[in-house]
Length: 193
Image 1 (cartoon, one colour):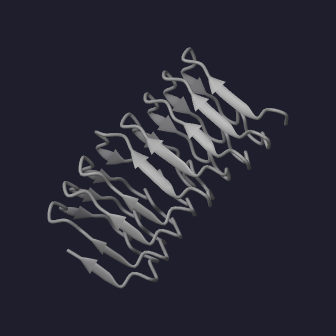
Image 2 (cartoon, rainbow, N blue to C red):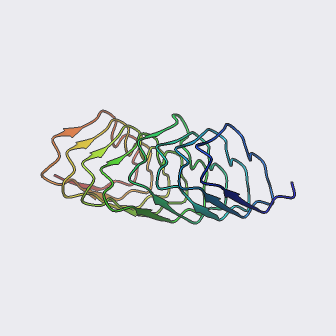
């Protein structure tokens, strides 16, 4: 209850389930360079947590790891390979408006921004070739997205229930679009192939 800042040292490899869940006064988290896994609910419900610096080594982030926090921006490292299913790591992050990808990111992992309610616009870098299943599922505020010019595959449910999405331009490089990819995109007026 009294914790307001956390620095995870480089000696830590994994932040376990619920490690800092419900630390209601936690404002900043700096994650050590060697952390490879952030488990489900690790920082869930830390209502005033605004600043998170992810490890450049993180390979997995569990569902609700940063759920219902006040995070405003995040840099996604190129090492990130998987995310926990269902609600995604940034569940109900209303303030998350800015997403930056580290140079060299090649995929958007499954569920990465599922149920992330704050993102309004996102630019997928040209290094990305795959958007995995449910990557932005129910990102209800997403209005604009610029896809990678080298994208080859968009997974099933990737943009499902993105109710504010108005237009999307799919580059010529795309050879596969998964089922229900745009299901529930009630504001979508234009899909350009």
